[in-house]
Amino acid sequence: MIKQQVEKIKERIRLAAQACGRNPETVRLVAVSKTVPADRVREAVASGVLLLGENYIQEAQDKISRLSDCAVSWHFIGHLQTNKAKYAVKLFDLIHTVDSFKLAAELDKQARKIAKIQDILIQVNIGEEASKSGASADEVQKLVKEISQLKNLSVKGLMTIPPFYDEPEKVRPYFTATRELRDRIKAAAIANIAMDELSMGMTGDFEAAIEEGATLVRIGTAIFGERS
Image (cartoon, rainbow, N blue to C red; front, side, top):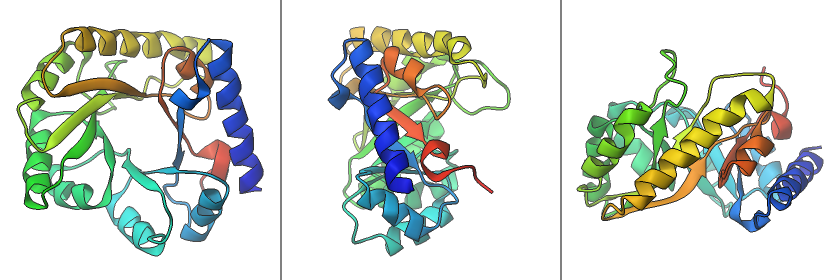
């Protein structure tokens, strides 16, 4: 069942990329495995999933240790508290949700302790929603400049969770705005900053996100089913 779902999603990613003239290889699937038991995650890995996205440190610790024999890359995609930074740098290859200099400085400090350069994305609250984390679009370039001074962090791009709509076309302007923001920051050519990744798009709207430049799509429900 999971194998078929993974294949279906990969095919939809391929078609969406080709439809807008992009190389499908430039879009990667992050299977969102929060609340999914380790044995089902293992099934997804056996079906060709290479990137796994987790939202909670404690749950991820347990899962990562159970699946330590799997050749996968772990991404943190949930809200990260500063006091969990030391665990995050040990567990994750890419942290999608850095939204303040305070958090970045703590990640830098903890990464330095273990001699690691931690890859991160800056989370943008593109819809300016009070209920969501993320730096406002106006603050992002300044934040990126500040973070560029931190030696043990490597900024790879932006991440966003736009306002929820049932209709992907209503979400599209938020994806467009995030891509344009990414392009402006890229054009500023800030030292030590790469703006190659755009983490955006989930089960209901990932095709629109791909058309607007997403390089990482975070998909859980379409692979593992509805969460209980």
